[in-house]
Image (cartoon, rainbow, N blue to C red; front, side):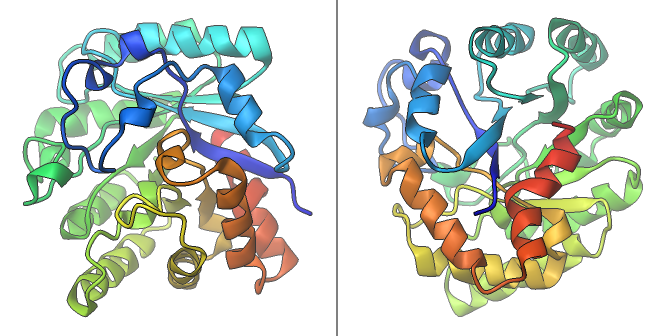
Length: 295
């Protein structure tokens, strides 16, 4: 059985997550009362016990603006205490003038720093909308700061819907030396024939850029369940476009705990990959993440 790297998980303190405080506001993943608590690294390790996961990558959780460095320090402390996680993808607002200084401070705070996620997804449905406009990645300031990622050897985690994938491909083409990882396999929110066609066409365009990769994570977000067939369908179509060497897996825990448990997600991804050669399975579950995140 292949060892697994979880390339997308979160840990947090309830008190530091503004979106978990006060009245619950509709979110992309639906009702989230179960998440309104601390989720330290010890809880994460308990969830993944006996699943074959050997390493993990922490991805940012939207702390308050101005606390980007503190978030990295929090995760570094968790690593110092437990040995987990093994890499950090932080938040940096690439629309801000101070982005270079924030990156420098994060790099100083932790040697685990491997990349940046700034959530750029925009949708006509207010519940699915995060970025203020659909074209944040096209502004001069964003592009200026994005160029700094290659200098640091950091990757960028891109979170967009199908309608933004053409811009995502253009971003990848403009910065061929920067590794980009598409979150949640392109967030297929519209499973109608038309919606699926738009998603596949966008994914094909993204896959045409050799520095673009993708992540099998958060696949229960829009259906609110762990559906092995749904996962297998997305995995199959995505592997056809990207190839196993550009795909990784991530649990998106504890968000997925709203509708399932960690072991069930692992079982589902293993089942989806079962028809593929050993080398492909190992690439998706371990080798590609090991290479991208240098762990």
